[in-house]
Amino acid sequence: MNEGTDHRSRPRYTLVETEHGHLLGVCSVVEGLFTDPGPATYELFGWASDGSGPRGWIGSRVWLVPDDDALDAWRLDDAALVDHGPSADTLVLTGVDDHMGPPEGHRGTVRVHDESRWLGSCREFARVPRSERPLPPLVLRGLAPTDELRAVLAKGTRLARDLDEVLLEIRDDRGELLAAPTLWTTVQAWRPSARGADLIDLELARYHTLVPEHARPVWEEWFGGSPHTPNTWAGLDTRLREAWFDLVRHRACIRRHSDRPAGHAYEIDGRHATDEQGLYLALGEAVNGPGGYFGGDPQALRDCLGGTFGYTRPATLLWRDAATARTHLSHALSPDGRPYDFFAEVLDVLAAGGMHVTLA
Image 1 (cartoon, rainbow, N blue to C red):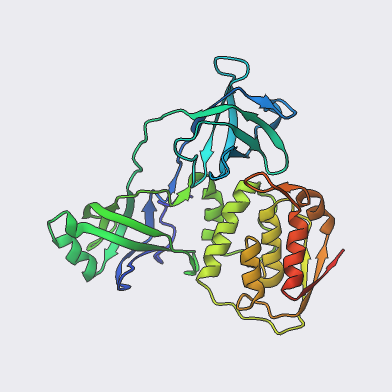
Image 2 (cartoon, rainbow, N blue to C red; image 1 turned 135 degrees about the vertical axis):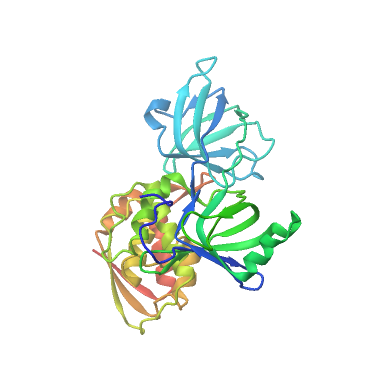
């Protein structure tokens, strides 16, 4: 299944103008929702390993930490070794930058870690220039336009077709709202649609990736409806767990939660809490059921413990198989490389929020 497959009569996508809340149109098919941003290439000169060779540690994600404390670390997903470059102490890596990317202009020392151990450092790094290909347009096929959108399209000036800020509301097969990403966009073209009379195919300029291509399997599962059983995400790797968590968080932002009364007893299935995403997914399901949300970082967890996210203090939590999280998350590195005990930090936050935890 892809985003261009029309598998139901109920519209999946709704285009909404944000300033006044005007509905612009609805359709069942969007092309270009998923985009592969493509890998970046880095050269690391003067590489010195902190232990195992690069073939032993290059994996799904690494963090690159500049030696300048004023600059932020950034993440490289799907990191892979290409070759050793012109000399034995030069590494050539590829990977997908996070939304921050490397700090502009920095070419000095960079240290590298994989969130659990330091891997090595280089005296200088460089991002290999690449030709930036424009993102393909977002095409809404078979769109039923409202009078507001028809009025925009009837104007001949380029400025008039600048939609500024709009929301693309995305629903599952049951009609429940999954996400509503924001677009800053312009109408590139439109034409009558072969999908029906009075329908159009609308092309919108796109300036950023809405959903990365690797997340497609997760979205396709959620298109069928939010999960009804816990741990549906358990077999996913860390990157896909992040994609799953993004949908959990999106849905939490647009849904109301009914707080349980004080004194409620919760139980967390800790068997799959092998990374931070797994821990938060398991905790969210313990409090709010399959697909539930209850924080995604320490501050968000504190906010959830304050109420309106299914919880009223005080309460109890039985943490089954807590040894899994203790083993995998007690010796972590923050993005900037500081060691910390993530498992202990979560326990501290829960205790401060009135959750009495029993480890089993």
